[in-house]
Length: 396
Image 1 (cartoon, rainbow, N blue to C red):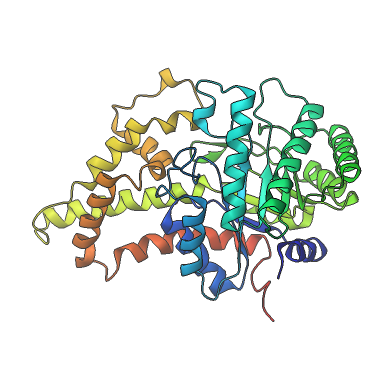
Image 2: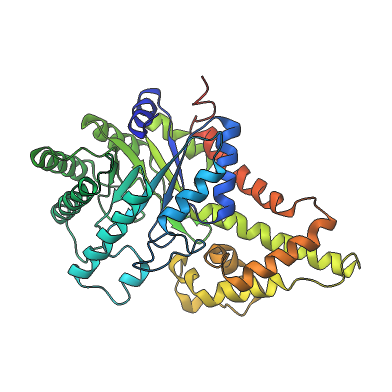
């Protein structure tokens, strides 16, 4: 099944496709396991911070290049239906490209280098998101989108690669709802310009529904009525409607997504937080085994995991309050911040080694401690599959 066929069927049958951020190897394995068990498709959407071509820099997920991520998924995916998306592709989308803020020429050069690697790796869907430009406007977003699509299509043809599908961003995410009037005008201008230029229409258009991830909860306010209006407008133009920042929404909002006509929804940091919390719980259990004299020595994972997570500083991007109100020296905040940003350091050598030793110690309690972690993530993914009406979607 082609992705375009899957999206068309999702729109017709009122289901919401799930996009899973590959924030760790374990999350990828859990998502494929659930996809097999529940006969549901999954879209892996990798941001440029997570997975990147070495020509530009490494992502935090195992240092994977796009090709290496694709190869890993293919090896694990027997019996599962999956698709691959570049999430938030475009200029200034890596954190380091805004600190300091890159020149326009360099930011676009890097974005196109990244897209080239995605094309060569066999990605099915490319998210064109030029919304990180300073003081951008809807007209500028459309202009940048057309520029990037022209270059991507030229690269694809020069490489003799098959067509790819697109997702288009409209504006940078915030805890609000996009005006229906502004959205309609954007869609009119975007689709008109694309048709005029002979470019394909995107499979998805991104719109703001009120959701916004902060720390380990959704700080926004999902608006079902407004979301339905935006989804209906997207459908008028023949496009699927995509929501970002779906993490942590209550189940009574999630079950509204198919009813509202939301064609796709992205979840990423939540699954990393689930994994980090489970690792913290297992680390406490390991310490208890030492106290009970069931193991000789603890691995030291807890201390290394916490110190590495705090030192990486990534928790700052998720804060819901001024940094001066956070005390990283207190036990409460040390654990809280580690849960929020632990997935950024899973693949650091010192963390990986301590995790390996901890899992060996925990075999006193579990035949396969890593399977315990995968199952906890699987539970979180199953919730979305059920709420989005995706269970048995691929059943013959």
